[in-house]
Image (cartoon, rainbow, N blue to C red; front, top):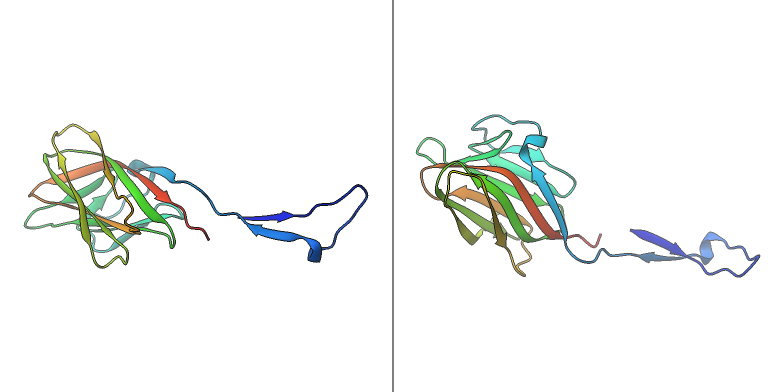
Amino acid sequence: YTISVVALGDGETTTDSEVATIKAVPTGDTTTTYTFSDYAAGTQYAEGEVHKLDEVLTITTTQCHFTTQLRIYSSDAHNGYAIGKLADGNVIKSLGFNAGNKVDTLNVYGSTDGTNWTLVSGVSITSTSYNDYTVDFGDTNYTSFKLDVDGGNQIRLQSLTLTYIPSAE
């Protein structure tokens, strides 16, 4: 954001060299909900399939299915995961999702570099019905998240809600 400010009296004019430019930095958190049915479907079980959801979030899936839902598989044949990466300078505060299909644990990891992962929470999906869940990332400065399923089931996410601190750039 750029704001140009100049104070003029009645009848005064100015040149560009007399204008002060101030950089406005966004304050507070921003929350965006992504409904997977709003995006183009991918290929089932693809490796490293990239889905740019907007200017802030890109999700890369491996052994998953990005369709009307994000389907994360956990089996001997398909051990999938999804990685979400925020644009440079944005920091995750919390991650919410509407999930169901099978009873299992959805592991949520955070990373500052997209390579080294720390478990933030193992979320118990307790019903085959779809319910809302939220994971608070606290003051971790994580810029990426990873989702995988702990047991041998498939968990489906209908939507994902990302709360983040926007970049100052």
